[in-house]
Image 1 (cartoon, rainbow, N blue to C red):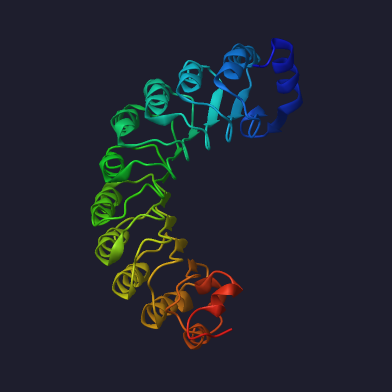
Image 2 (image 1 turned 45 degrees about the vertical axis):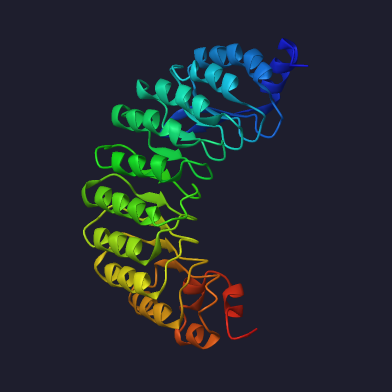
Length: 324
């Protein structure tokens, strides 16, 4: 049975948080995550969102980890036009490509929402065209999370290319989108081409996609000229020593990147030593290498006080050679 109107009101009153920030003023955050809400529940709650909007406060809505599917996403797309809606978290639902399309189309003409989370929603390449159009038209969105979906190269590569023209987005996560073939190198090249010209992006996640050494070399070339990116996620991307050496050379030139995640790759002592040289000269950088079984304990000790930065956690000291 869906929520009654009274139950919905009580739920919102219970979950609504009000804070007052100096820069923005009053903000209202509504956390409705993990409540097993269905499409029918969203139909009941949606009109109450509109009443909240009339209060004139910034609204952040978290609907992650519910049971919202395509019809619920369609209902929520109708709320994108609310004047004070700033962020919408739909992570961990099953809105599917059509649901993402509904929300993307609404965002294309929106100028208030700054953050949207589509992660873990069974979104495939069919929704990518709408998302690309949205990124080319929207001028307010700062962060979009598309990780843990099923877009594959046919969806992720066009989105990466769209970053060349987008001038507002500061963060995008394309991690774990089922790119396991050599097309992952094409994704890296598309990202690299965008980084050559993009001047707003500060964070990008490519974790879990098959970037490989050639993809890493393409990204390294872009990092030599990019002056805005501060964080890049390359965890579990099949990068070996050759790719890491190229990245290390780029980090000697780049002065803005402060965090690079290289955990769970195919890096050995040789690659670790190349990164150690960077860590010695740039100790403030966070270079995570945990989970690279080819890095020996000897190489970790050679990193001369930068072991934690390079290894990520103490567990990295249990890498290869049977060392404990």
